[in-house]
Image (cartoon, rainbow, N blue to C red; front, side, top):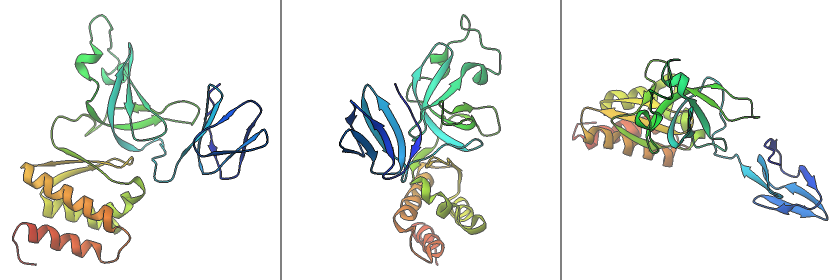
Amino acid sequence: MNERRIVLPGEFLVEGDYQAGLNVFRQGKRLYSSKIGLLSIDKKVVSVIALHGVYEPKVGDLVIGKVIDVGTFSWTVDIRSPYTAILNASDYFKGRFNPLRNSLRDALAPGDMIIAQIVEFDRTRNPVLTVQGHGLGKITRGMIVELTPSKIPRLIGRKGSMINLLKKEGRCQITIGKNGLIHIVGETVEDEELVAQAIEKIEREAHTTGLTDRIMKFLRRSRGLDV
């Protein structure tokens, strides 16, 4: 049995001949969750995957993921979530997939990164992705950096103030995955690295005030400009 659902701290999970795994405690024969998270029951081991700071998929979200497996008719994609995602070959090949003619591994191999959108998800099965849309598909250039998903609003800023600043002063195109992966494409590697450093600074200082001004000064000083 492998059950997956969101549980709360102190919530009763199962009773009987089960083994307590991660974030689970026992009282007699009953097992309870010690954290809010995703319940996992696998081979009599009961665990809870903590959701704090972890990306919870939503339909419509733009995500950046890594291909981790290639099947006969689909790819499995890591989207930094308790759930792995599925990209169907019929979507990638726009409905013209022929397993005798089209090689999935030649199109996307393990380790390849993609920008995609979640089109199906209801917690009873893995999220389904699409790469049909403007800006979606295989990533072939640029740099990817990580950010805690809960800090994405800080990266965007009020009315887009922070992200617009990064694009203008950093001289880069930036794609934000709701799962905390950020794709940066600049004219030079130096531009990409500078924006990556700025995003790392936002990660560290997201709880502070006046951050947008400090990021502007950081970018301009790094270029030797007056502030």
